[in-house]
Structure formats: structure tokens, C-alpha cells
Length: 249
Image 1 (tube, helix red, strand yellow):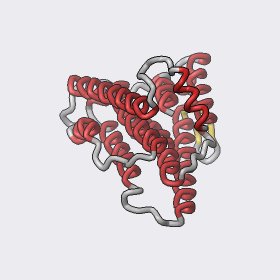
Image 2 (tube, rainbow, N blue to C red; image 1 turned 120 degrees about the vertical axis):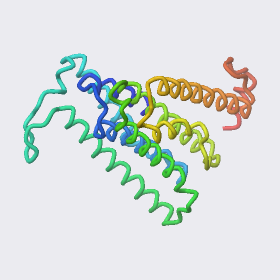
Image 3 (spheres, one colour; image 1 turned 45 degrees about the horizontal axis):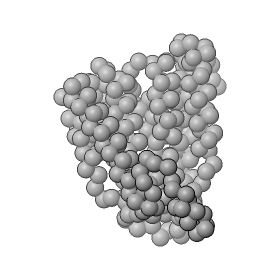
């Protein structure tokens, strides 16, 4: 979904050149739905794989459409019953919002049903964090800097969401506790709160921080996983280690 989000941004900027609450909501809705699916696996031990590949294929189709038909394709207006004439990019965003909302609702329903309502306050902490991410993203969408550097704002939101999604995926896979506080996300939240005075230089510094934090997150995670498995980092798996793990299956 992270790669799909990047393609989605490219698709959006093939048809529009400004950040609006609608485009930001469409972007964040996909992140939230994907995050919730990983949270549900963490809570129930079962990952619902329906829709992930299909979503990636739809995003790829949208991306290819801009290249095949030109950047003006999604600015084309079509007549829709009850809605009148609507630009194709607006209709696409409405579809993304509807699909993501339905997916999120279905995930929450399945999780609550599987847990039989036994969800604690700690269980809902990850959802609180992704909710705060969405709120901060919407604040950035209304900031003056979003008009100066719209793509940079989308990248900042994407990096913030990707970091949270990566942590949720690792938490679900390794069955480790979800952190109560994410210090690496504080600069993003601070930028959203200071949106009225946020400039392009501060936004560039934020992007550098986010890129470094995400890189270090992966380096640390892979190193820990390799240490737990007894294999070297960025090296061929020794034959005896592979044989040992094959016997343990």
C-alpha cells in the first residue's frame, strides 16, 4: 500500500497541482484502511488478505491512465446521475474514500466480533495514533506552504503514514507491544500545529528527518531480526542455518 500511495500521489499530480482537503482525505483514507488491517491481525492473529492486490492493480491502472491518455484525462468532466457533471479525478477520490471507509468499517466490525467486545484501551492506541496522523495531515493540507510546495506536503504525509504502517506491520508480525509514544513523529505533529508559519525550509528539514528516521527504523528492525534468527545482516544465509530452520518447520 505504501508503493500504491506513491503512485496515487503521482496520479493526483497528473491531474491537479494543489493540495485540497478532499485530495488529502483520499490519500489518508487508503493509509488508514491498510493500517487498520494490520492492527486487526495484531489483535486477532488473522490477516484478511482480500482487497490488497486488487487495490494495487486499480492504483496501477489509474497511474497508467495518466501516461496513456495524458495529464488532462482526469480533468475531463462526465455526467453522473444525481451528481451532475463531475471531474474524473473527483469521482476517483470519492471512490477511494468510499472503498476505504467500507474497508475500515468491515475491519473494525470483524475485529470487535472476533474479540467479542474485549478490546482494551491499549488495543485502541494504534488507531488513536493513525487518527492523530490523519488530523495532522488535514491541518497541513490547509497550510500556506501546501500552496507553495504541494508535492512536498504529500511526501511528508506519506512518509509519516509509511512509518506508522511499517511499525504496525512489524508489531503484528513479531507480536511485540505497540509503543505508547512515537518520538520520531513529533516533528511532523509540530509542523502541523505550526502550519501558519511553516515555510519551505522547515518542510525540507522535516522531510530529511522523516527519511532518516524511516531508514534507521528499517536498519534497526532488520538487524534485530537477523540477530534473533542467527543470520548475518546483508549476507548469504549459511547452509547450516538454513538446514536448521528447515528441520524446525
